[in-house]
Length: 191
Image (cartoon, rainbow, N blue to C red):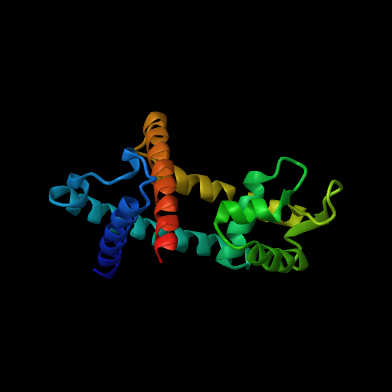
């Protein structure tokens, strides 16, 4: 119930901040049907489902991390680097933006990962202040040993979704993520 109450408080604050700021478009404002009545229950259930999904994803992330002998956040850093690296390395700021964490956290964790042989960190040839990270051969090999299990798990989780359905969900989630980012900013301004 706590999470739903927090959500309700935040939605109320967001609506009043939107009115005060006057800068949000009509598409950013919740409709009266969204804020009350039957849609309230749907929104509440949706929020609880997202919270539950986050818990399950976190458990899966920690499982894969334990397989490599690292922490869950370190696993996420490796996954972000693997996704972002196009052969030239990835800047700390890009990984921190993808993971929505402070760059200093990525720097600290990446130094530990480098010490344990999971990544390489080198200064950029264009700007020595920028550190570029890439997966080490050790990390790539260890992640590759998990790939068939990870693929099997993904196939199980997404078995009921065709490509179009996955695309629709991805677009809706991206939209929701953007709106939540705006809501967070609105709360920060109001706070």
